[in-house]
Amino acid sequence: MSADTGGLRAHVVVPARGVDVRLAIDPDECVALVGPNGAGKSTVVEALAGLLRMRAGSVVLGGRDLTAVPTHRRRVGLVAQRPDLFAHRTVAGNVAFGPRATGASGREARHRSAAALAAVGASGLADRSPTTLSGGQAQRVAVARALATAPALLLLDEPTTALDVDARAEVRDALRTARAGRPTLLVTHDPLEAVALADRIVVLQDGRVVEQGATDAVLRRPCTPFSASFSGLVLVPGTATATGIAPDGGGELASATHAVPPGRRVVAAVHPTAARISGAGAGLARIVTGVEPRDGLVRVRAGDLVADVTVARAAALGVAPGVPVRIAVDPDEVAVYEPEVA
Image 1 (cartoon, rainbow, N blue to C red):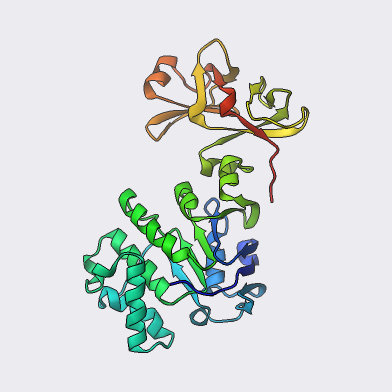
Image 2: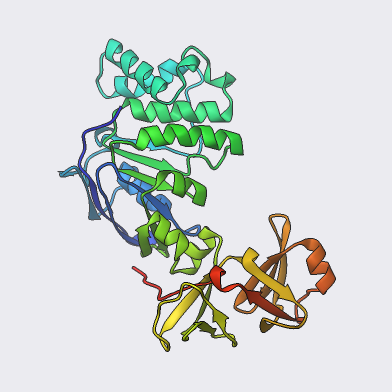
């Protein structure tokens, strides 16, 4: 159930929240909007949905100016963290509610409901009460509900955050179907969700766009600390050398993929699991500045470098703040490049 729409061109300006964001989404494109808490992501979603009125800025969808158009006339579908289904209606009734609310006849609404449920693989749930559904089932119904209105723009506001791993996979399949044929904005904290659904990533910080690019490019070569963290990488700032990078913290890391003339300011993207830590020998000399648990490992911070090691390895080295260590990384695990920010 796709909608024949044009793209989105929006300028979200909300001075009271410190937000000034320009956003463009082409037809049939999904853009992931990411950033730390308080960056302005929810403000952007609310403004596009018409839930937050703007005194400045603009929202243009498919050539139609929606800036002053009320929510129910915007043809914008919203899937949030919680499905918030009507407990007194069946699943089919919940999905049919949107079309009915926008003027469709009962017969047309039932047809759209059945088609939307089929599109997300939830036809078998039609006669069920929402109170009997699992979290993943309820969220798929919420996706169908948005789809039944044939939205010209789809807003996905952390749609899988409240689900377990298995349910997330099911809902992502439904979202992949729903985003086809229409501009879609995905707010997420999950890099796997961005990879699965988004063509581009836009990074917000303090109410401004600080980085954007193709999903693969942003994840592989992040330019800001947040996008690096989102990708699971660590950015090491320094100066390009003939063989890699001279980190600001001292020493040199060789890179098998560097192509920057020596002397330029660069960053090296390194995954913490690729860093090897020892008490002496090869590697860059650093002093441990922090130790913390991390996904079954121990994250050792040593100034500008970070290494994820097993608990046994950390214990054997006796790592603790103030302890000197050596950190080495294989050249093929070090990507050196000049950061390009928005």
